[in-house]
Length: 276
Image (cartoon, rainbow, N blue to C red):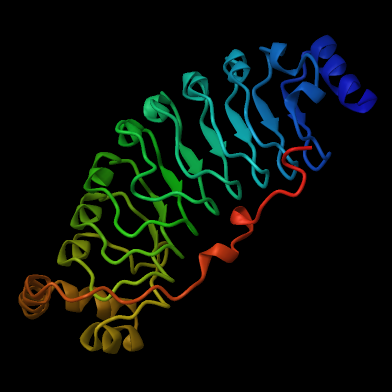
């Protein structure tokens, strides 16, 4: 406690803009008195702690540009979080989030959002989630999405999108409208086909990344993957594929079964000390 208090006091007296409180066993931000009064702080790291919630007073840190809460036990987020108008980087990866608060998409300058390793699905996103048009990087790996909203096309500045290790049975064709996309990670899902519109993107150059392994692709696409990503994109741009894709969608085949038992995920295990 004394060490945490000293960090806060030093920051207050010296106007230190960067605070790192990672890996200190913090369970409640009340254990760090005065932290939410440090309006001058721009970078706050509280990763690898045991926080179960974020207090509404987080909104008092009006100059925050980076907030790192990776690897905690957070189940709830306050609506005041999206009132941080200067925030550019928000890391909420490896927590226990099953929903996001109303108005979460109100961030004015957010460029990087990490929500990997949570319990989110297509029903977890507030209606204004895709209003964050400044987003360049979005990590949603290892969640529970089976579908993904078509509104993804509103994020026109998106450069990196990670949807790996979800339960996706389809990829929205609107992803093909993200013309600035440089990296797309969709490996480890239940995808059998790709939307032809994905061919609008250039994801096979030396500065691009396209990863799509560990999906139950239909045979024609799987054959192209064995030859390389450039062959995949050449194929999905072809009239032959567009015709076959249309027939496949019209047939409405049953989705592949889920492979992984996500009940074993760390973010779903009960907290033994939750009520202590």
